[in-house]
Amino acid sequence: MATGVPSNLPKKITKIPVELVYKGKKREEEVLNKDFCDFMNVGSVNGNNEENKFFFGDNLDVLLYLLHNGYKNKIDLIYIDPPFATESLFLNRKQNNAYQDLLSGGAFVEFLRERLIILRELLSSRGSIYLHLDNNMAFVMKIIMDEVFHEKNCRAFITRKKCSTKNYTKNSFGNISDYIMFYSKTSKYTWNRPYDPWTSENMIEQYPCIDEKTGRRFKKVPIHAPGVRKGETGKEWRGMLPPKGKHWQYTPEKLDEMDASGEIYWSPTGNPRRKVYCDPDKGIPVQDIWLNYRDSVNQSLKTTGYPTEKNFDMLKMIIESSSNKGDLILDCFAGGGTTLGAAFDCGRRWIGADNSEESVKSILKRFKDGLDLYGDYVNTPKNKQLSLDYEKKCSFLVYTTESLQPKMKELLRG
Image (cartoon, rainbow, N blue to C red; front, side, top):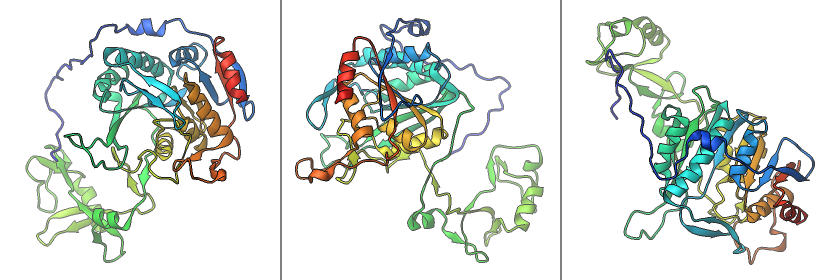
């Protein structure tokens, strides 16, 4: 793959911002100054822990309530898995209506954009947001994410394999992917690089050479880079100049040090390359194509039965990568509570919100009763229910509006 070189133009070209235009698009000030419902504490689960909070109600009201009640610039990580503009109804495993996904087009875009504007204001200066969508609206919403969070803060556009290979294609390629947009609020954001464990096969593939002295695996990489330099890295080393149009990655003095310490590999034709050794303790840095985080695919996995429940390990990886222990995580499309459970597992605090009764039931099930095996709900034994490692019992407070208070209290009584 070709690598570009820095532009030497005396003046930067003025960048023309790209904006999405549609009917009903509000000014940001109008969104941030909307009226909203008040919320009250109506109970607790597993104890009165004020660090974790769940809100039952419209998440636009919830986000505005948080913004005007002390949470501006306080959220360290946001993951949201909103409706995908499918114009469909979604049922849980018991065939109860879990949520409606009926908005599409400009109505869907503005629905999500309003929430993203408020979420930006809630994010701390080191915070990040992950937006999970499929091909229906991901590419439209990429433009909105650039508008709201600025395109320079786009850290990754991730492709995830969401399911197994499909045997039917409906006269096209099998649809097995969805997309996750990763943005930060500023350039100084929390980042703990994630790694996948090595296998013997990919270690041999990535690091095919073995050092005769140490027995360590290594690969050979060029010691030059694109672009002409007039300084030390553009000068001759060991009687050689860097290839035309390129420069040494290091000064000749540094290259001498590296060669003396055995870090330079010399080919039979006298071509120098740098040895990069494999560090088996770290593993392979995770890239922007995720093949190992499919949603429930086998009967040994545990879920709440909520539709569109996402992969628990994927959420843990996101949380560990973009936050630290004790940080505050927000998911305002909480669904089955996977983000909240993963946050608790990782030692983070959390805030969740949803307006679906089935979501509330799923979250209460997750933290009070434990999860069910994904597989056969008919023939599994009576003791099929498995508690997660929640022996410490994740405790949280429950909030709702005055109008929803009776329903929430009924759900808490179970």
